[in-house]
Image: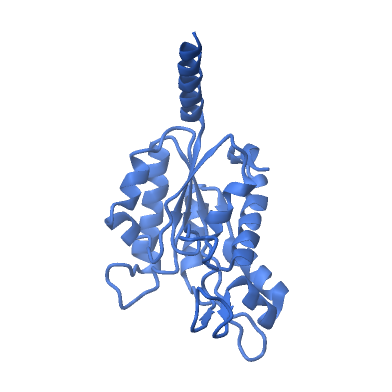
Length: 244
């Protein structure tokens, strides 16, 4: 009798898990999960997102270091997401950092042609499965000039995300704006805490030191994850009910 009850609870648990919606994240290193999180100072903001959501939703972070809107698809990573997508799921889409790499034909996209077409295709294909796409602009780099002004490095790519979101009526989070405000609030020097700045000998993971204004520290990733959740709470996508 006990064995039958155990099997029954097991199957009920599997069914409950299967009925949960899934939040899929697709993007680059600024969103991705990092290996050895207990030792590695670098974190992607998507890595910190699960702690801000309830257990009522599953999360799959498919964001990967170095990927653009082009290479994420050509490498078959989007195909793995598409094979699992179902009605009621959510897909957060955030590219731009690596689409800029004009000397890399595997990753570069023209913002107003290939990049735009790629974003539209992600949106339309997610919708074809009954899933809800959410577009986000890329986060800013810490790039203060000698006068303490934060200078944009992404040029036309965030604008194109806004255009696609507007034209296709896609839920949209302007992380470029929000992370710009975050960096400015910390200032030219303190904003180093949001990224990876270590002198030689400061951290065993970077024995020779590190100066990285693109990728995120745990503080930076956590701060951005909170910005994401705060924005998503105000949208009527259905995802807001899974926010703590």
